[in-house]
Length: 458
Image 1 (spheres, rainbow, N blue to C red):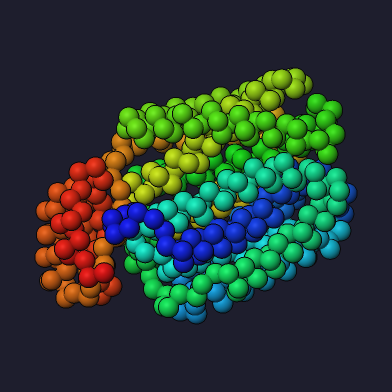
Image 2 (cartoon, helix red, strand yellow):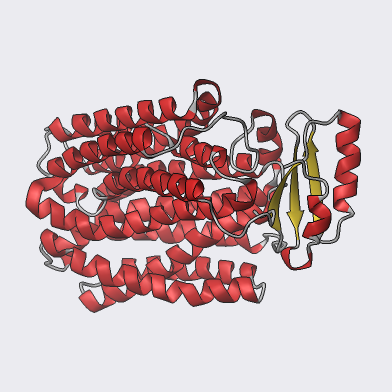
């Protein structure tokens, strides 16, 4: 989003974005670190079965999906920081429960508690409170980048820490990181003057019906569901494949994850640039889905070759990274300007639900048909996604733009929306009368910003 008032973040905005990104990073790091090691650790827990292992890996996604939007709305009334601190305390408590458990049921309970500390929507709402409209996209990008960095660090650090302190130690470390995040929230994150609803970043109850009826947005929601279902199901069995199928000691699994993650990232970047620069997002996006399915088939066909596995994982992570980066951009492009926050909220909840389903189905298939059956599940899910995505509308290359226009009456707001739409480069305009905000979709290269600024009261 941009308004053109200033090209750079202020010192306060930099401090806020850095602190909130740190909170997000330390929380996600603790969640991700168990992925590459938990299946092996769970073998020593009482009452363990493959299905319960999958449930333990995925259940945090269920509680996260159910609670993140309600907690975001609760923070509108109770304040952002109190809800964040409470969520981090719940997350820390879940980590302690998991660390102290010697049964799989105790770990499942702990993981469910971890997910119940669902502060993702609250963090984004607080970021919106603390930044100007023209810089909000930059701040959200900084926070979003921390997820990818946290995942990569966790894939490498998880096996190393497992060797030093064990998975129970990783859970204890996760609790410590949650306490650290509370300290960052209280001491480094500024307190906003007032918390208000930002339709470009937050879910609004009255918009859910329209968002859930939008077939283009539902295609993208289905995509993020499948993408994270496949990722989670893979990690139910990948540690076993590396140890039992290829004879690789668990402590050095990072030697596989590090190069494939780096290669996957580097392979993804040119395609992202090509898709945006030449407006070829749909064919690149659909092609990446097809490649992801082929990678799943390659993993299923692995006959015990390390080179084959590494090559298949490189292809998998290249496609995964491209899709993970493209999906939020497509949501932003396709959502109506005043429903973007709601669309992103539904999208995020669907992502976490995919994590839950992936863990459960991965455990069930591992128990019934073995490791290769889990990869075939992924291939089938991706094929279904490919069929859905092929009929997706080509995205319009528009940017979100927010303008503070001051409180207006209903008729005045409607008239102003028509005037804004008449400005060169503006494709859509919605004025929310009671909020005094205008939400627009614009063609950035053609936009007459000077004309738009005349409508702003900022």
